[in-house]
Length: 144
Image (cartoon, rainbow, N blue to C red; front, side):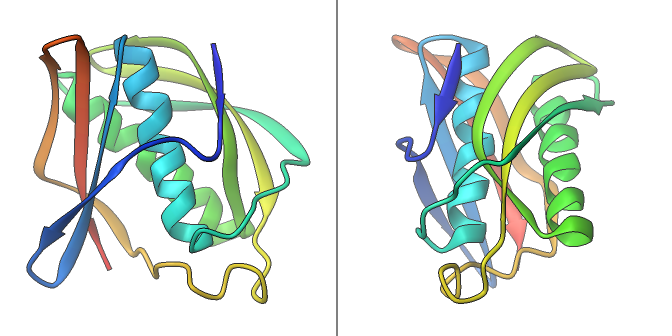
């Protein structure tokens, strides 16, 4: 299933950093919402108009939390190198050690996205991906 901005997520307070958490009925929904939460932070709440789609592979990690970190690092790499922000996401497959996502990216606009967070890294610190009543919860801490 394809998810588009905006999606519900929670910002987590953390000393000198910030975090994001998202929930979904399935593991795939939780990861898609986590990707879009990162996009929402990068865009500062400004709208994102997707104009290119790409398959993104997050490889690595012994569990789902580490795999989610790997996937978000791939998204952040594209932001840093191409100035694109995820506006829609579909998780094609997800297992410990590998996530394959189809992401629609839009161009970062300095005027529209001026409130965006300056995210430097996605960290393993307090990364979680676990079942909760009614579904799954995923969270990461971001170095800003």
